Length: 419
Image (cartoon, rainbow, N blue to C red; front, top):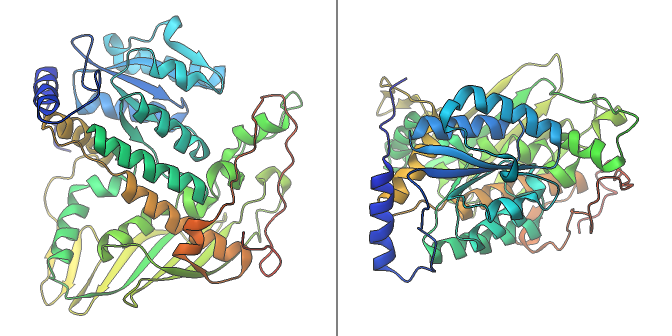
């Protein structure tokens, strides 16, 4: 992999000052209190810990300044790893270590410049809203919501970020992969003719599950196994398969307008796996009649397939390393780690005074997944407007760690109603 060019703090501050002079920015948006880019991590699991390391690899001036999580063991494990990996760039102190459901609020007030949002998806809308209102640049993992109210909130926060000239980069790393970007440029330039169909796949075996301990409350058990509860993860069609659908939306240049889907819970039926499905197959249709065929599965012992395929009138492509047809092309250059490039592009966009804002883009791909889930759960065709206008909020009205929280029943197509 090629070595990233370091973004200096001098570039960061100089560009920030220029941007501030050019537009009316609220006081403090581009203010930095030391000779480093102070990063705060909200959500200290494996993905969050990895994201901090990726951010540090993107710029030598990044320091991890503050951390927030609900669980103290997540915090400790993450801190141990980051101390070892980042050495002197690990700057977290006990008074900047925050625990609890309101920990993110304290982190945002701790002097950070950029925040990394890597909690389970259900918390993303409220965390992004608070971060943008506090004047922070943001890296946030996908998906960015689990229901339509959450998606609408992301739209609003993204629009506010644009007004404040704040950056939002999403964890759809294919958008930052140099091979994907080159292939997509060629596709959009018409080298394959008109796009007429897309295929999106994420078929694999099962993932981790933590057996319930006697001392765990309902809420703690669900949070520690967040993958398996729709109110926390959005189901795996949203939590994982969004990557592939996002590529198809990128290729077509818009979101689909309706979906019909099937899915179920055929193998992973033990209550330890919550109530989500273990497979989906969805036909999406765009407003010009282009179709996307989407498949995702998490079942042990089955064939794996994780890819995208774009079909045009003059060729086909896997959207990243090759195009076959009238104009044949194959990627043969260096391919830096896209997980690092996400952060590098974030910092460089700020330094250039042109902060990236991927909020609406990733929210549309999130709603694409939610629309497919709604169609599968109910057995009905679901339109984009039906999905977007849904008033169904999956988040419980209150969250207290010791609380009782019943598991929603497994959806039954034909019986589960479209809300």
